[in-house]
Length: 212
Image (cartoon, rainbow, N blue to C red):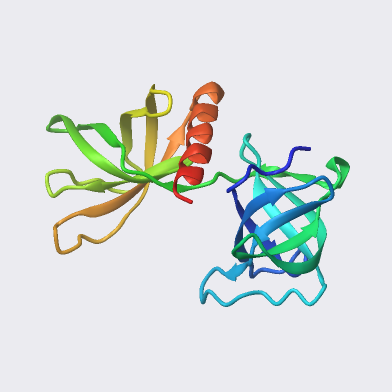
């Protein structure tokens, strides 16, 4: 089982079933050790105290599946920023969860939405807010009103390298309008080809590293 990529986001937990987690990133790898950013709590940004304890590290593989391994925190070192030095797991020590969770990353790609209404077909180009292998969210102008359960066609181009995507989506939720009249709509991909989903997942990894 492969390790996460340098710069990839990690989740660190005190126990395998502990609900709260701390966010970190893989900074560097060695033959026997890994070096990760000091984990910070996801909500209040407080640092996790290592104290030589065992912790569980989680990350997403390129197939979207969740992976985790148990490791020991050895010490705090400086590279030159302070990082944790932890024991590098053996490939067989990395467990793959059956369920798939997709990494969601901020993005600013343009998305052409097509929705079929009783009054006709509406086409609007909007700006995406974030995307994952499971769906995306976009900013809706006043001229477009969507409701949960509606079906929308989305077309966009992924960069690095350029790859066109045409996906059917179901609207999951629509937020309130902000002061600029924009509403955030979350949509789920439906019947997406696995090859297309893999391209989107590859983009989220590339985008994640770019936003380090």
